[in-house]
Image (cartoon, rainbow, N blue to C red):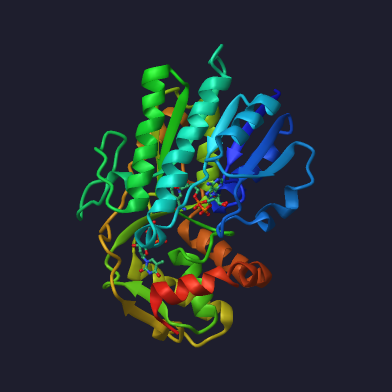
Length: 351
Ligand code: NAD
Ligand code: TYD
């Protein structure tokens, strides 16, 4: 089948796995990747597929309405998978405006362009918005987020994602724009920018630098291997019900401190250090402002209705992730030069 899809944010962490999957699995599709290449976007992530004949890259901003309109006219997209976003909570606390701009204004610019381009006929069109479980707020010790959990975002990041989710639904209800939304838990895997917990810890352990754990490390996150998320996106894009929301999660809750200790253990083995060496690097630091205690996802709707389930165990996923970071020093060196150093100094006040 021939289709032309716009994937936004395809040079980022999750986006690059989604682009690769679609380019390889669907040779009849043309995949157009639009990415601004912010600090988080990196074309190295797509080196292996960049010369494929069904792949096109544009450097550009999703807030640039004339550019998006032009791309819709030129390529006649019949689907959009929208991943472009500012994605890091700590950066949103330090500088919220960029998040409002890209996550809210950028999403509306895309919705407007899709609505305009598809106005004569919405058949076989789909605007798929990728979102996060953080829109639901924070859980206590029990319970899980379902698709019916009321929104209660706490950080500028999650509030901006919540706003974009609401706007996507508003375009469905008001204009009948065919949309689908998924809200996923924390992803991990190759190509994640080392500002997020797992790659940051791997990088610091490797370099024998302090590993910062916020507060007392009791916060809980549900971790999903990025390829499992990419598969869920594939399934929802092709089989999801128009207008629906699907929660995606790994059923894999970890307290931050336990996760960091596990990483230290894996790294000791990989680096040939005596067990317990890397744990000495753990340093409890000032807690994140408004730090959500616990996220947990009930993904039974997606599992029952569309047959998805996470395939990668945490053990094998972490192993693959650690191996990837250890054998991709050049990638790491590239992304942690320049801007990252400034960010790191301001964020952590650590050596
Ligand atoms: P990321 O920060 O690694 O990548 C974001 C990408 O978007 C980058 O390539 C960046 O250059 C691009 N981008 C940013 N602003 C842009 C703009 N104005 N115009 C065009 N491109 C722009 O993010 P990620 O972790 O891959 O997350 C991707 C999506 O998935 C986001 O929407 C995020 O909210 C969502 N999500 C992430 C997670 C997670 O754990 N990482 C979990 C659930 C949902
Ligand atoms: P992060 O990877 O930033 O994802 P999110 O905030 O979107 O869940 O953080 C995961 C958890 O790890 C979160 O509870 C904050 C915590 N954390 C640390 O303890 N130290 C760190 O240096 C970072 C980046 C995060």
